[in-house]
Length: 229
Image 1 (spheres, rainbow, N blue to C red):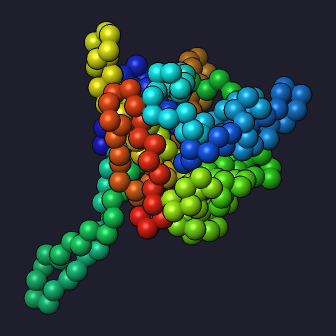
Image 2 (cartoon, rainbow, N blue to C red):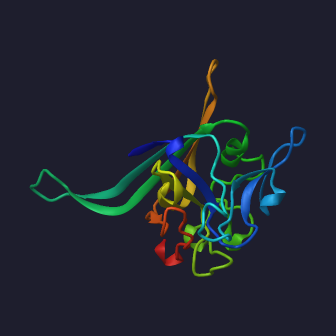
Image 3 (cartoon, rainbow, N blue to C red):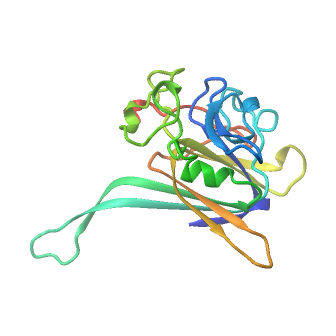
């Protein structure tokens, strides 16, 4: 497990597609209840996850999440125990890796709450549906959630990209970018504080291996082949 302060990392959340205008967020106002939408970013009041159609360059194409106070990354392994007659210690057979990313930010709107809990009709825990058509329900095999732009790849879930900072000014101020792909949202909590800042935490989980950008100012936009599920 690794924990980073918000000042040490830039956080980007994207949908798992390079198809244009497939961002997920909410629309609404103080007088209109929020509605979760898969739409053009300009049509969203609050954008949760942009699409990756802009390419790999971060600084010119993507906006990092504001008010992030902490990022926790946990790596785990799901094993199967194999017992042998006459032996006390069982064998461990690795089944798959598990990646969990928890993002904590200062709460300034209801976006994360609505994304996790839903708007009364839909929720957006699983990203897009098959063919980038609408929101995913989590009731289908992730392997069958095929991207509309790359039909041999999946658009299931979200991609959380973490850009680590070195603290050095200039072109070397960013060290590397780790991307956790095909994440679904598995938890949401809000911390209430009577005399301090109200914070909220959103937890993402994935069983796909982490990938990395080629440089500190690039995200990895390669989609996961359906065979990888």
